[in-house]
Length: 377
Length: 227
Image (cartoon, rainbow over all chains, first blue to last red; front, side, top):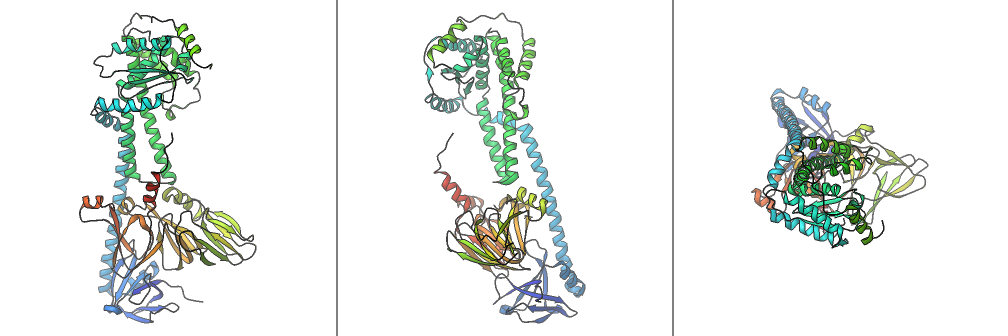
């Protein structure tokens, strides 16, 4: 049976990946025997002729060198038992050097461990900071973005969206939404935005606001609402998204988060990559819920200032809540509608009582006009 | 086990001859065709925890395929996912290769594969991630690259600089450090090379002639954005 090689020999005339050989420790030195048709000649290297150091990728290999010029040979030993035997047999002047090398390796490993644990510490700190403290940075950054930029950004998205939809140009529904917007925006102090509100012919029960003051109300929402006050509640909520610059905050947050996570984790696959995605999703969802709550509360105050009956907003959320029993709040962009309604009721109780002024339109007629103008839903 | 590279160049395949009851480990999904005497087993190399850590940490596949010639001698055809060359290496028990995670295609039964954590600077800046495969043991090892594969021989203390995304594999007697490409930081970043690996012999470094990351971003510009 062939002996198993336990070392690699390097030098002129030997393969670059090293010639495998068998090394044994004897009293006078190292006996090096070649494997197969290797150009390494069997011989004994005396301890006096060799120099040793630690080497290899992890500094865990024993590197033994001897000879000069083209006959210089370097031997890489990896087997721990062989290294231990070498240390026992070698004279003290050699091993003293070796002990220093071993000490260096141990020190390198210790500082390595220290580096790793501090890196993990910094990373944990960063994650906690991102989770809890990043909102402040985002607010700070967003406050420095001029309104004009925001409007340009919003307008391009708005035009792009509208070009694909059927917009209602006139009719009772449009004038009703205009009246609501008019009454709400009048009461916004120092309003830097010119709000544009469009009604889109679509069965979707939704409304959204883009940065810069572009608001879209879907006809489906108006069909679903039982009064103008309910729609005004949603509208007030959306206007406050714009006023609080939530869209921008979200973008800045996403960009920043993606940059930080990208720098820290790199392009990871596997479970780490999945964890990265999940973490980012959860962080933005949490952010989303905080924004929704803020828009709810400021929206409610705006309604009250504009003397529009604020309980319309609450009723609308209550009716939405009948549908979302199975949702888990942690995983959703919007707070649970039931909880929203509760929060709003509490807030409403704290607001000064106002006598609401009704709208000039008849809600039933507005809804009927929608049914006539659009396709049957 | 005997290996033969078919169609050398950009779209090669490996033909592996197995004696009765011999096995070959391959990257999962690498099998193209096989004799009817061959059975495919999915095996978690290094046990469940080993496989889990490899999957979680290096993004390497959870399972390797084990192809066993259980009903008599036969042959298996294996191919990598990406276009590029294949190289056959012989492991003799002492030499070990560090392989970046996409580089492994197949290995004989005696080939041992483990994931290994790299140092912080190497992991963070080396572009290979924190984990690479450490492949040792005995038998033939088949590696694949993206583009052509190029071998760099290093004498003791000889140095060579490699752009880290072109790395495929290197021997464990070779050390390397992460270095900036030019002497200044600005020049390093603007030259498009950024960080490079400075290898120091003795040993062998295998590099690939194409950079998968750059190719990915080049191709991304042609993919229509849908939403």
